[in-house]
Length: 166
Image 1: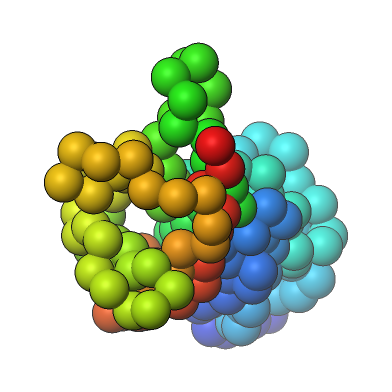
Image 2: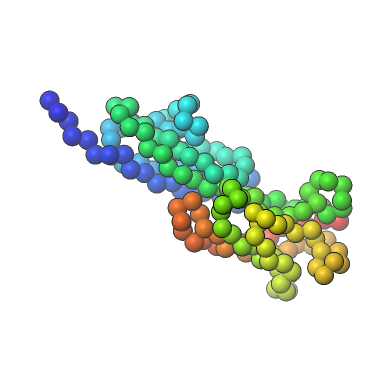
């Protein structure tokens, strides 16, 4: 008896992106369930959700019950620090968005609380030192917008804020 199987197909959803506890969740169809999931291609689990603790480019591996094929799905995780302390002690002296890799296209724009443009930069190449025109800015919250392209090639935008502490 020959059983015709549909190929594995899947997608990734990153929830809590830009937080300290992002989650990668896989949705899979085809093949023969139940499915097994891995973030490293070695250790598999029945849960389709992975808790991630740092920014990065990840690959979720999915195999079905027949073990005939393995589906590989890329996932990108972005994070940022909620505060920074530019006091030249070598710890948290610069603020940036942590990127999945240096190939990710993104632009960060930082504003003060009145909407004044402070800095715009590519987070894979630059960061912010807490200064405007070489003058140290005040300890307060600053807002940012990041326009980026995720691993699926979709253009996205994220807005939030962080604190500068002196």
